[in-house]
Image 1 (tube, chains in turn cyan, blue):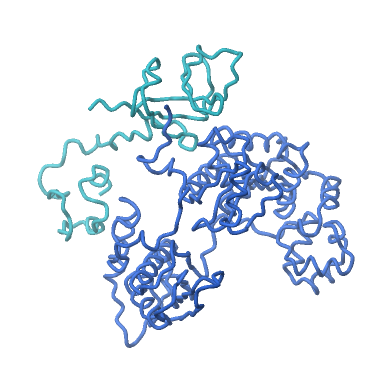
Image 2 (cartoon, rainbow over the protein chains, first blue to last red):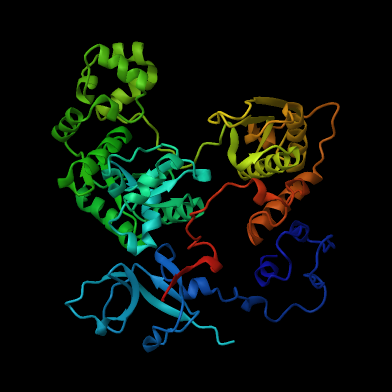
Length: 137
Length: 421
């Protein structure tokens, strides 16, 4: 049963318990294609099934420290950040190397690469940009 | 040992995380309906001449003159930020007890060889770094002492928001520092009683005889007395207790006369509280509805009333409860008044598995299934995606005024923080 659920074939608010009885019963409100456990040829994929990719798991390293932020305008072009892009910002990471950060300078948000930060200007790092989501449509 | 962690000016701090232009500036948060100030940050509190809990319309000018930024309350944001803080705390100990939206106890068992001051700073710094929210940490052998340590950590600057009571000397010094009103859980009545017999500090309180404390202040007072002496009496409860009564009442955005709109608001509140009821797997025996006009108004005629309905069978079914609440509302509604508030309260709450049947009523089990699907759909596709038609479509006519609400930065894709230009 779990396998069906993982694939989302059966909406999970359907009464899935009937499948556990061993007999295949039709349940009302099931909008999924017919699929039976008992008859026919077992799926060759049976032992190879995995959960589909979850972007939250892949792109968000520390959920409790991660915020999404939308860009308005093209003033950050130099860092390949464009209008309407969404940044994934992780506050738990350190700022060094090639990293790009969302910073605060003079009470305003800004984006800076580590190499572009000079010691004279006082800045506050708000979080590290881990991904830039860009819609190409 | 137990750590008590709480966020400093939580609501205002949440707002400031997303508004760097307001760092170090006075910020206040208004109650539902923008009625009065319910939270203020340190900078706002320092403007001592601004009275807290005053109706906002009276002091709006004062706020503006002092460049105080005000926000309508955004509980969606505060709740989500709170969840982050609690999650981070749970990385420090397997046992945490969420005490309120901005406070939690953290059990630090078996940490005899850990430097607790350092551990406290680690908690404080991690939360600040990860979420942007400032917290204070008090660590002590009992809950009541931990709460006191937390208070000291904030009031005495040199501790920098982390204070540990780990020796008897420190405990006694802390007790001498604390006035009786600083003791967590000690009511005003008892503070007065202690004052009468010349007890002003927590230390003096702990020097009273246990017999006197028990006699005059019951077992509750005795527990505090023991906790302050370093003896654990209050349990560590990791699961929230099921609620005995669940209610909600909010003022309307504007005064309402029409029964139709009041009924819609009432149905809306019922659907909110029944959701809570189902989440904790309980049913209610009674539903109370109350209705009143604006007490503060000099020009309006005043009226208020309430009605409690005993249900035939305890239930958590939204439709049944809406029907009953509506009957109750109709029985107390009188035309010709300008109403300010309607409220509902469910009580007589019992676990849903213990519902007593009724010889003359059929229990309809299909309804449970319907309600379950209701909850699943609303959870999956957003609040009120499916609801009773009684909720109507005129929500904006009675809804709370939240003119200055910040965005749902962390829960709504359309309301993300925007930067640039």
